[in-house]
Length: 539
Image (cartoon, rainbow, N blue to C red):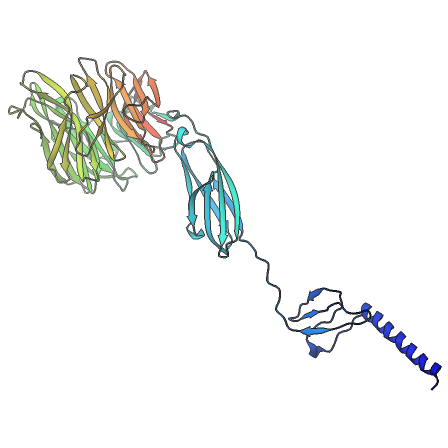
């Protein structure tokens, strides 16, 4: 073959090789299926196909392709943080005392949550246990704008965060929330207690005749609930004749209402006690003998205890104290006469010439005792006599264990008219005076023994503190009524020596009761003009 003959086939072969390479770039072909990989051509890149094999091509010389096929692992997945689907505060605005609750929804991979309010940690733990709420009490303690930040963390330490806002704008302490006035017939209220779903108040209503009456009011609007007012002649089958008046109220753990009342008038009165279900149905009732009266009642474990007095002499009238305990079914368990000498007395009162007037009673859970407060007459020589504040402590079985009598540190005379729980203390409401019509309100912090030497005196002339109660912040709400003219004060204070938080005068009112609910709202009750009247104020 000539040289020219050899060059032509080589040239043709070279052209074919180049043509094949160019065509392969434009139209790649698959290799045999038994290879298990895809063949691609690139420059310095790697590509992952849908197959479990990876084809890698490196940089080679011009016109050449090196195909390397082998097995390798897939790329690691990118780290994905947890998710917070929603984070809210419901409601996000509070215009009065109440509770706002945080609500959270997160992805299943969240291992822990952390909640900060204004930068301070307030909760941390697993998502399944998340529960946090904000409790607004008073304007001074709660008003403001709060920033809530939630951090969610998974097991790998990756986090996500979200924020929510809470706005709290509250009325001033003591501002009126709602008012109830019984417009049908003359009447007045003597006691008030908050139940879970109602504000219960008792007293008397002169419609159609003057008799003991109970109202259940809506705790937010002060409007009577259906079926109320409910009077003694409606719930009792005993055909008890008017007049009658409720003077005390207590609710037990089941919400049953114990109503202490007096039937009749003057020295012919008789004590009456009824226990009604939360719906108002009579469960049992008791009528005592003539010459006895009740002034207050409290609930103890499986017991109701009433206090009052018994007439021991008519000319002149002389009284001893009366304490009676009933079981849950209405059976009288024990009854005791409270009379001098009491523990600590120096005079025996052999002729029973000194009076005892228990006005209120409270159960002390810690000591498992009953604490009774009131007024008593004392004397050193049986000629000069003074009225003194006193307390007496009884066991649940009726044994008198201790007593305290005021020594008259602040005036010639003093007394206690009501008692109420306030944290670890019991508060007594009463008066101090140095002569006729010279009384001024007194509040006493009673220790576990009933000692009331720690006191607060307020310069509200001619008035007595008729009732006290504590709100959620343990601020004291009290009512003081003028002893000689119409007019009552609703006041609030924190300690024995701080100024009033608020003070309101109601010239036409005579107030005798106060009670506060779990949120801090306090209801004052009594008489306004000639009608039963309730005023609820903000904490």
